[in-house]
Image (cartoon, rainbow, N blue to C red; front, top):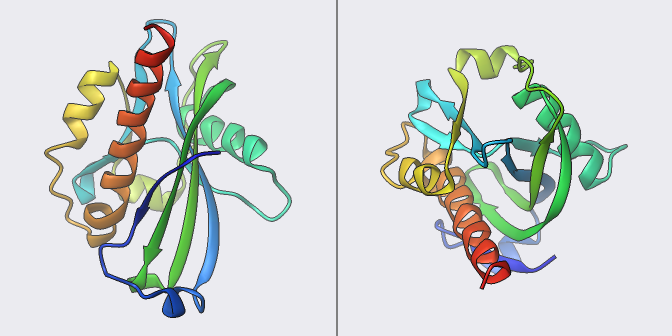
Length: 172
């Protein structure tokens, strides 16, 4: 999968990141039958993000993404293609995270999400928006969390912009 960006806002040196824990995560730009995409509002921390999360030890990227979408969106998905990958050097957590993003479509009915207690406490809610509306929604976010401001919002905005670019190239 193509590397889109390395996020390193805390200016982590190569030798420093070599000591960090690593985490693999998956994200999706998920379209519904009206060609809207799912965006998760994290209202208590004042930011928005794409659905997805960490890949567990016994999972591959695709099965992890399908599990995350069932949990966070309450629906099954079909993978349509790749958007790209972003690597984040999160100094505050001593973590190197690689996020892989995919294009996907809802399969069947949209159900109710199964948020964790932490997600409920953070005010998670699903919004279905056009790609353009989603980009606009992520742009003005002034996250109350440093993690959201430095990593989550820039990462997911970059993934959305790449998804739009991929879509335009397919229809050119």
